[in-house]
Amino acid sequence: KRFIPAVALIAAITGAVTVSAATYSQWSRSFDELLQPTEAQKTKLEESDAVRFYDSDNTDNEDTDTGAEQSAATQKLSDTVNGVTISVQQSIADNYAAWISLKIEGYTPVEIPEAKFTCPVIRDVQIDIDGASASSESCGFYSEYDSDNNQWNYIQEDGSLEYNIQLYSFNKGTLLGRTVHIEMSDFGYETQKAQAYPTIDLEGTWTLDVDLGGTDSLITTEPNAPIGDSGATLLYAEISPLAALLKIEYPQKQIVETDVDDSGKTVTFYHTETPPQLVGIKLKDGTIKETSSGGGFGSYLDEKSPIYRQILYFNTYADGEEIDSLLFFKSLPEPGQPYTEDNCYVVPLN
Image (cartoon, rainbow, N blue to C red; front, side, top):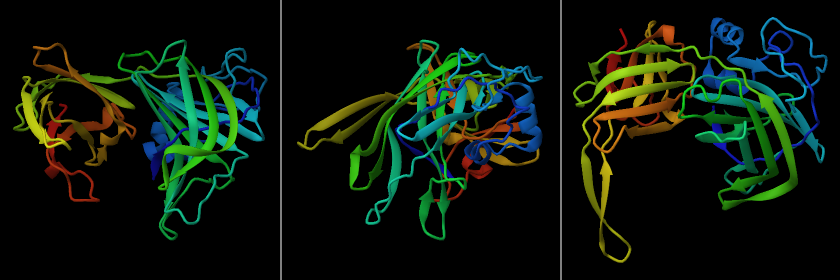
């Protein structure tokens, strides 16, 4: 399973709604497949208001026991334009990250038989979070690989498409309980023959407003432990369901590299070497979950400081109470193989 990065267009029906895990608790396909939470973990996330479900057909605003009910005045959970409807299905948020799942109905992706692949995209997606922007964001249609036909499938069993937006913040708590305004323009597609700009096959602009929940639940630890023989020391770790904040002691080292440009001229590059990156977590039952593809930020506290502050965003769900060790990059695994302890520096949390 994977995300295909994309830019998208959406349709809209104005929806004033109640949000309640009690009334609509079906996890989206992508959240279920990518985060892979257990049923117990799902319950924990829902009860903490980290996860919210959105029912655009419910306009009664009745109270619920989850604290997830929302004011109809602040939310627009569905929009229909040119026969295409985009609705908010689900969100999950913690101190540093938020995921939003959208359902798209009435649009069929274009297929180009002679192309090696055809990827649906939304040309432009604009995100506003209570008047500000996220530190970073990514979005795209969810797809599953069909090995029998050697292709990626975007269409769900009910004929709809799923589109996900992932928001990231460098500042703790800035996504919790916020209203996210989403504006999406123009559906299209890309193939290997057309990479620079998508071909647009449906024009329009869809707008949505969704109130996030969120949990500030996290674990903190100060291992003050070496990261193998890398020369780095893990001083502090803060782990929430979708992200980790790390502070690592690793004296700054300037690396000088040279290359030859197209004119034959030697070009010199300077950059600062960084400590090994977190690539996985090892659970207390021995399971290893990779975390490396979520992206993140990192920088030294200042130009002379030996302390490197790093925030990494997971592509899986991390329950801090179940984590035994953090795994840092040591070497690449064989092509197509997952990380193991042989490829990593292992730092126990206890």
